Length: 401
Ligand SMILES: [Zn+2]
Image 1 (tube, rainbow, N blue to C red):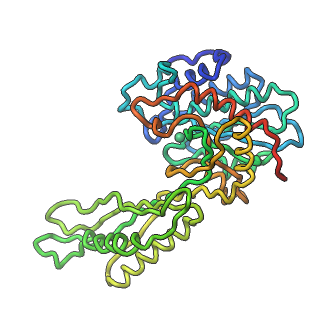
Image 2: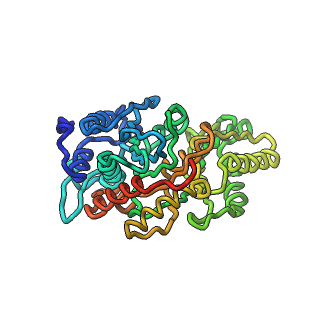
């Protein structure tokens, strides 16, 4: 990695974004390189401190830390939080220099330009503007989290451990993802299960001595595909229907051995209003029915991911607040839904820390440019985002705490 520029270097939000793109923060699980976000988090910490903002390191197990940057507190005012992740997806197939932050035709190119270093840079720039105002309507901060692109460890640690320990509780959290500055108030969640069947190995010259785990799995897969999936009826006006699919299968070791093990992975998209635990119970009922119909069939399952949907019903005050700010900025305030998951549902749920925090997703740039081989964000969107985030932080919060 090249030496980071001095913390005081960026004079504009574009320069801040360019500096952030300059750090290779490909997610540690995807790259195998530990603590991928740490050098950028340290640099942002030092930059924020040089601008008289407060910073706090919030440790994350197996990762470095989430970085919380806040403006000096005005006692008695509500808190609003903006959130952006520091990690990116891989760069292997990129057709541009991933960390060069080239500007051309009104666009900044580079890995993370749109997902989501652009939104993160605009958030921090808006906070800097706000901190210069002596009498602010709200207290405000920007939370930079690690590991969003793989397992959401940064957001989960904030929701479960950091948030309950803070001396204040945010009235709302705006999560930065590329939405073209449209408020995304609903998105689907996901339940992923790994399903195993267990047979008895035997030589294929006498199959009667064994029991095929693959044959067992065919029955399991058939029950899921022919009975469970067609019966799915949950849907949400902003995110569409619940979905389920079987997407990997592994079984057997050799062509002349009756297979002892077979494993599939199942991906179930959960719509707002559905509960991940109830979804798992439904799938368990399907597995139980297969067991009853096939004596001797051994099937087990484990959870690999339970990520909640974002349900707008929990975030009404924040949605109203953000829509008011968008109208004041002369922009469309039409709320929308998204097929992709974000950290917002983790904050809105915060199951282990009491009632959730109202959360929604809003950021500059188009999701169509995220994760692409020539990722970019338009300078117009970036600059507008500074104003929009500033408006959200500066608009008086009109709801009871
Ligand atoms: Zn993202």
